[in-house]
Picture 1 (cartoon, rainbow, N blue to C red):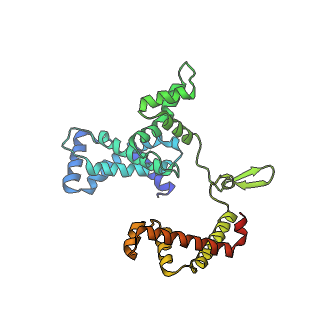
Picture 2 (picture 1 turned 45 degrees about the horizontal axis):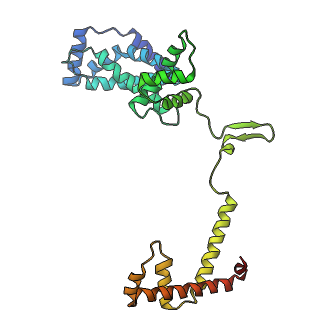
Picture 3 (picture 1 turned 180 degrees about the vertical axis):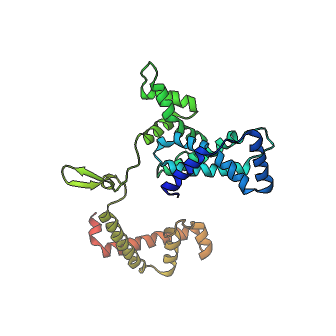
Length: 286
């Protein structure tokens, strides 16, 4: 980033640089494009820096340093010089204006807020035109409500009223840190973070659920020891997997009918229930 004296020097040089006549501008553009003449590029960019400064001044209302906007505009100016086609009957300033403005606007969108905005062309147009359109509507003889203003802007820019309302609220106030102190008359100063509502379980609930889960797993492991090998296999494949095996499939694996598999499963479940009640007799009364 340039220092303040360097920026001042750049501005003074830009404001005193001579304007280029059409023929001279064309000659310099050809020298730069065909021969990559750095002297020609320097003369083109220096003579158009007053355009960069003028456009940067119009965007100061977004609260970003003028020097930073000028630097971004200079990047856009260099991009325009790299892409300019001198054989077209267009003045360089006309062509470069779009690149300068686009570079500055992209910088503003990246740095104006920590929340990324203007991710589409319509949202970008809304961001940079909302204040101007709102001010123009407010100057009318008729006093309009916010809803009417949002409707007018929505129709003018081709966006929804909800988008206009959301962007208006974002532009009306800067970002606030969640760690910023808030004065509470009852308990003194606290942070905004403490006022956020969370649907997550409380820490003691999380710990309690984890302990209960470990206890249930231990009970089940102990109860499974009462089953014989075939019963244990059926319970594991039917009850302890995300997608339990069918009676028919298990019957084919074990070489028995699916009805026999069902009978063994029923008997195994009864044995498990009895084992669990023996470990925890208090559940019998529940």
